[in-house]
Length: 141
Image 1 (tube, rainbow, N blue to C red):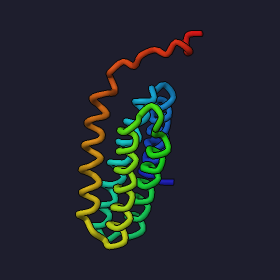
Image 2 (image 1 turned 90 degrees about the vertical axis):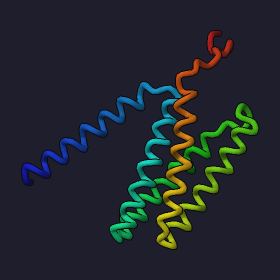
Image 3 (image 1 turned 180 degrees about the vertical axis):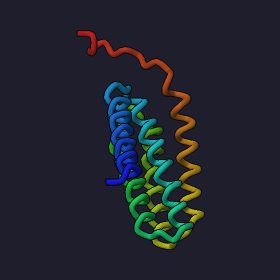
């Protein structure tokens, strides 16, 4: 193993430990923020792979982005979130369809649209991350 590949492996392991540490102590709001960050990264990487004509890598990143969107959809609480949760579900479904069509048609515009939507969602989420949630009385009993 070369020194370069050993360094890359060590850096990768450091990043995994760093991510695990962040996730372990994160609030539910912060976890959603991490997922949105990962989504944005995956979509941007898919677009870069499209530009480089790296089909397999593009498909892998697109699949990663879709998996994150499915996870975000599954995390929605329709009872507590009401119309907002319903609207987010519809938006996530649209984004999934858009990624699938952009991937199949090798269309950069679709990746750009999903990246822009993700950036908007992230900005909104960052705005509410720091807002304290009311304490449920059941949690104190």
